[in-house]
Picture 1: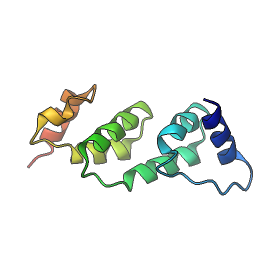
Picture 2: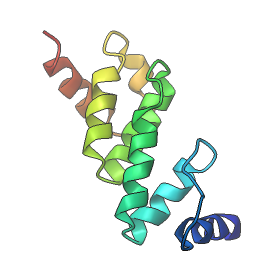
Picture 3: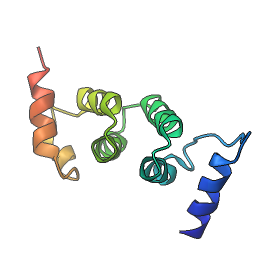
Picture 4: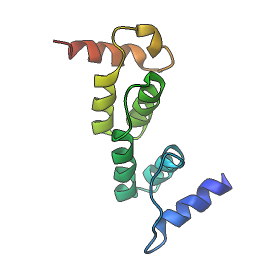
Length: 108
C-alpha cells in the first residue's frame, strides 16, 4: 500500500518525530518486522502493551500480532487477559484453543 510505504519512510527518516499511534501501529508493525527495525518494532510492542485489555476482540487481535511478530511480552499479557470464563469469545483467534489452554494453566 502506497500510503503505508510513505508512513514507513516518514518513520525511518533521520531525526523523524513520527511516533507509533493507534492510527498506525497495526499497519507499521509488519514493516518494522520485515525490515528488522528493532527499535520501532519494540516501540510498537510497548504501545500495544499499554492498551487496555478489557475488550476481548482487541486482546485477540493483539495476540495474533504477538504470535506473528514474536512479541513475547505482548503474548504473555494477552494470554493473561483472555476471557477464560467464556470460550465463545475466543472463536475468532486461529490459535484460540491453545491460547485458552495456556490461560487455564495460569489460573490458580
